[in-house]
Image (tube, rainbow over all chains, first blue to last red; front, side):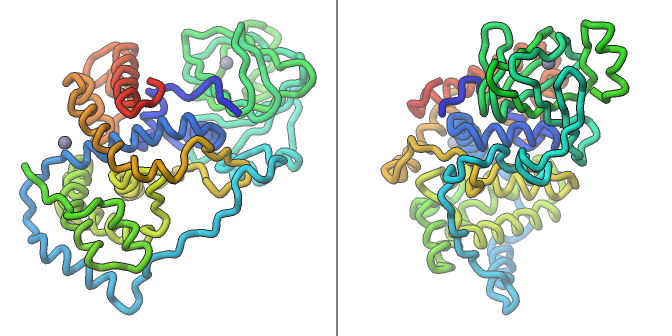
Length: 225
Length: 186
Ligand SMILES: [Zn+2]
Ligand SMILES: [Zn+2]
């Protein structure tokens, strides 16, 4: 599998430095689980972090380095200390092809796709809000029926959409499993699920969408989208 | 300022710690990295005592996790950085930091890398270091701000009074150069 739409450098950098809040992190981490190319780009960023730390000039320490080492050594050799943890036994990853939701997403929703309690959004679409400890974002799964569009909308903030199953078109671009779409205030779009299979996506936003249709706008507060 | 360089490749020493709890190898890692990790903590924490404690925690974690370090998959500098970064974040942020799990059944493994890459890992770290040093100052400074003070790319734009687009393109330029130095697709 080759991921066509990878996370942008600026968002991946926010992930690598650790500033990204929990809601966004779920989307990026799940994308990373599905994209070896993006993980390699993350590895390069973490190597850059390592090189910067390597070059760091420290202020003269008040603590004697030997004393610091003795403190640490005593701690590691004390009777109750935890030793070197043996490596975990590794199952062969990618062996269970039937698992649709990778971690960390699967842990958040409490199971794989077949166990989800979808809530109807109308016109055959469903959603499932995901509880996260990050009040700045809204995280949910969306299921768009095959061949059907998401109502046309713009954005008041950032929107991340990660495809988990099926695919959708947005203009000329096709987004399939593992692909990530980043949208911001400048983008007005209407994603359309590809014929033949429902499209399941993870959507993360930090502001309500701006729907073009008055009808959708009217039901927006009721649906909580 | 010159820092003590370990006598041996750090990656090999982490492996030695992981295999046999080799205290001599671990001391070398400590001598080389303790001042650096402490300085990294100071960048954000600004308290020598807390920085010392976080450095000690980082070293304990390096000791405990040494057997999980895979020289095929990554550079030791990056590995130590991620451990220090996670501990620094945990020290003041309560929220969860979800991450991917390489042992997850839905995880898509990288079939492109093999055991031969382990030989390259050390060389790769050096090539990246050279490329990083060669970045234009405005790109280098931006990365320092991001990694040391933990500032998001949009906050960097605000702080430096730059358009968001400028910050994004500096980030993209910087990493395309670093990737090119490693022979990756820029
Ligand atoms: Zn250097
Ligand atoms: Zn959108």
